[in-house]
Amino acid sequence: MAGPVLVIGATGTVGSRLVMELGQRGEKVRAATREPAAARRRSGDAVELVEFDFERPETFAPALAGVERVFLIARPGDEQADRVAAPLIDEMKRQGVRHVVNLTAMGVEMLEGMALKKVERYLEDSGIGFTHLRPNFFMQVFSGGPLLTDIRSTGAIHVPAAAARISYVDVRDIAAVAAAALSEAGHVGRAYTLTGGEALDHHEIARAISEAAGKTVRYVPISEDAARRAIEGAGLPPERAERLVGFYRLVRHGFCTPVSPDVHTVLGRPPISFARFAKDSAACWR
Image 1 (cartoon, rainbow, N blue to C red):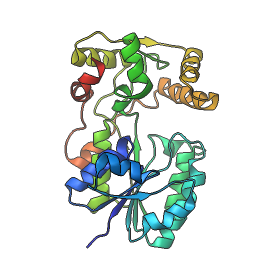
Image 2: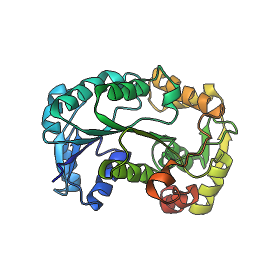
Image 3: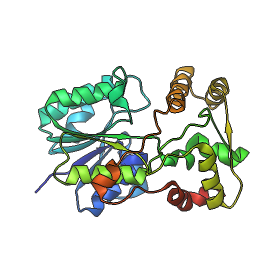
């Protein structure tokens, strides 16, 4: 019988949904988190919880004991994600892990110096079976965090995207693809770009949210300087602000516009639409 699947980042946006998906497939899940006691208080004993911290390599081997499959998310907001991921991948190899489903980002295959690209390459060179998942921006950025605060407090979406379109993807689709890759044959050695089924500009996004929430939400394009001020005003350091502004620079150049068939290919159904996401999330904007 197959051993447990180790889910790194199990309390995060994608990881928590993946734990549910794997459970529904009858998989035994080991949920990795920095604070298992706190997670246990929230979730009870439904899944096995294990302590794991990228900055504490001594947590790697106990978390990996008896594991052959791993879901890896290597700190996507960290420009040195490869620094902490490489020792973990080394330990996976020592422990006999056979397959890693690795969450990175759309387009990293074209960005050689990006930390997540380095993680991909290191995993490939390790000899462990891999599947790369490269998602676009999550639809859920509008139902949590700074953009939700923006919508609630101002009735508007303020981002430096100009008129660019983005093929936003629902986290539920990302988790479903990850679960399929971890529990079904045929995904080792593959890389999937995960997008929604359409690319929308932010005026269209605002209209969809307005319709679902029953209130007017506008899109207000802003400059890079205004975005930096807003990000730093929210308490993020200048280097983080610059990184986010840089992502939107790619957005304005059409980097996040393409629509991929990969969600449909893996799941056998169309991706969740933004209209469906908005309807399901409407309560948070009211």
